[in-house]
Image (cartoon, rainbow, N blue to C red; front, side, top):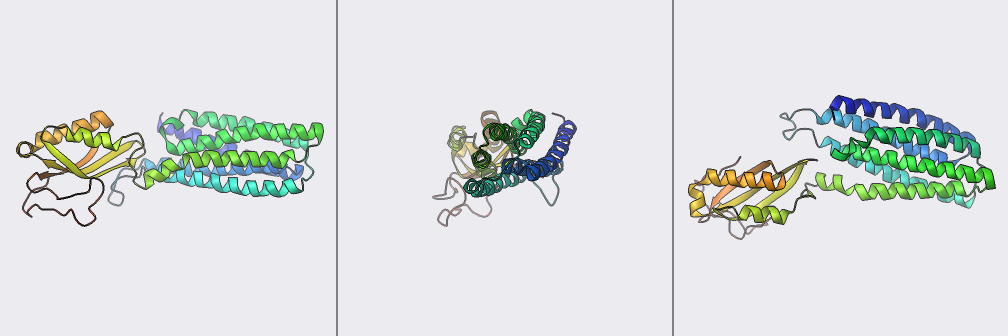
Length: 312
């Protein structure tokens, strides 16, 4: 999708959620409905999330510079982490408030709850629709979409609760629905927050098998072994690798050809188009080197200082 078109969608969603939040807070106060206020707080977190995501989209498009040599793309991962953390905090707070009101259910104006719940459902459905086509390729926008999807479902629950209050004066239903909404919010946030954390912790991409990558490199003619492997995500959809490659005598004499074959295998087989490879001769390779990460002290280089290294 064109970035400008995506920005317009997010901007429209911000304004829609801002107006809805104000209306729901006022309606919740006037009607005495905690479920309506709970939905309003969730919408407010959506609005804040939309603002964060909007700013992150703008920043992420900046080119790499001397300060951020990898570029600014990871700002969207940070934004997603903030948004999921906000969802968790809102969910915990709502469970607490709902529990307090279960003990002493207040009077609730059912019609106000139903009417504003219907308005909220319309806005939430609109916002979810705006972000649906964008969320498949961005963890940042996916966080927003899940916010809005949970809002839409919460609005349905609020309408049901208001209807039961009108028909049967079941005041306990309002805080009970609040707790259900909060539990659902927590479920969504906890199920999704691991992805951004993994990326920011420089974890290997979840859709790439590290063992398969190493096996593919070892199969290249002229490669004896690999070690000191680092596989991570530079950005959400950009995987990167750096490692030491031990070459046989034959591989050492045609180093450039081996390097090209390794890079082709990484890109074609795993979508890794950014790799830095340091080559070692089989006669001067690191001894007892760790396969992943850095040595813990034993596997120091045995090669002479004058031996060349090749990176790309």
